[in-house]
Length: 340
Ligand SMILES: NC(=O)c1ccc[n+]([C@@H]2O[C@H](COP(=O)([O-])OP(=O)(O)OC[C@H]3O[C@@H](n4cnc5c(N)ncnc54)[C@H](O)[C@@H]3O)[C@@H](O)[C@H]2O)c1
Image (cartoon, rainbow, N blue to C red):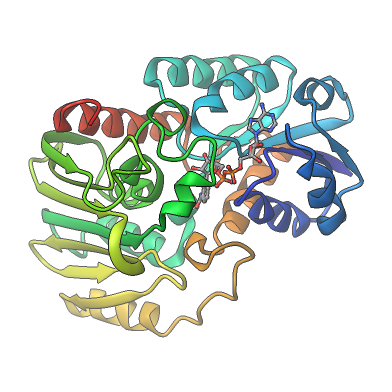
């Protein structure tokens, strides 16, 4: 039995319990949170041990790996300590708040032969993998342009009830680094590195409760020069709606990374048409444990993580690719004008 611990038992932690609970030979044996809510969390999820002390978890030689699901500002400190203690690490997005520190952590994991992975569950969504495959095989031709957007709704209580959300220090931004992360990360996964051309942010609806942006729009470019437009807001009345559209010289596709992720439209050569028709008829995933828009692909990334730990192989994507997303986010905030 391989023993896993979850550090940070808030909103997303149930998705980690669910994912590790589905992998043969693995068990979540320890829940850790600095608050005493950890005891109720462990009881609710049938986790044998609960502790408020990260040091205790990391000193436990029986624990092979840890999930780090705490506020953004604390990611790097706990990841570093966990790697230092010889644990394999699955850390929630983003890869900390400082690209230089994230680069060091990626180097530390590699030097120690430990698996380190930053959660990007939507990179595993079937619709995303299908579009990535079509791009790699040239079914869309050369990328002409990409548009990506998220409109979401956040009540003030989402921020006022949290010790870190909406604060520059704890979250490092807001709409982009938190909710918009997956849209940007998915686009990078499909078309590669991005350069920021311009960005603009504002705080329309939540200025009384957040220090950061509730809305940001930007123009970026792929290394091949294709323009990419990105718009993210948490000030919409719509609860959650993503759209990503890739236009190529031979074909175009539009899809979402909501739950369940869907191919929305396509146009292109017969080979694309045949595969897109099949993809659009794929049976859709069952319900996830957390909020629906988290999707179910934590399960897929966790299965990949466990297999990588067991076999020593690489995962679908490397920490360096997650670092790339953090670098793009950092550049977007710099272009948008630093702190609001
Ligand atoms: N991949 C996704 O779709 C997804 C969804 C939600 C959240 N997240 C990410 O997960 C992370 C956590 O988000 P959340 O919404 O669960 O936050 P949360 O505030 O609900 O939970 C964070 C928990 O970490 C605990 N914590 C903080 N410092 C700690 C420490 N030193 N030791 C032990 N526990 C500590 C807090 O007490 C809190 O219970 C964030 O990085 C967030 O961006 C990802």
